[in-house]
Amino acid sequence: QAQLVESGGGLVQPGGSLRLSCAASGFTLDFYAMSWFRQAPGKGRERVSCISSNDGRRSYADSVKGRFTMSRDNAKNTVYLQMNSLKPEDTAVYYCAAATYCWFTNYDYWGQGTQVTVSS
Image (cartoon, rainbow, N blue to C red; front, side, top):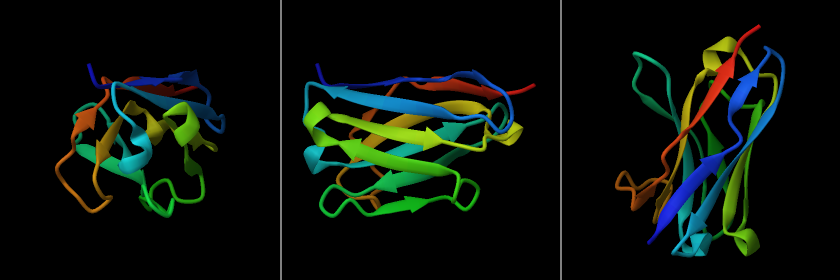
């Protein structure tokens, strides 16, 4: 069964860091552009980053640019989201998703999400 499983969420103080992981099973991430999304309570879903499959090019939402870094390790079939200088407004459930290209809006796979809470 193909699936994505996120991990690494938790409670962190403002200014702190977390690294999220998204591990794939049942399929190979190599051929997919991978995205991280987040959804805060009462708000819509926001894509925070994407990494392409072919050249590893990354894009970020303005709200996280300079603070978040996305990477992929195809050997481990896993993508990561390093989040630094976290702010209370980063609090959300974070999801990873797989699509053919970063500009595709149809996603083949979604993870179940991991909660990130930034609070003192």
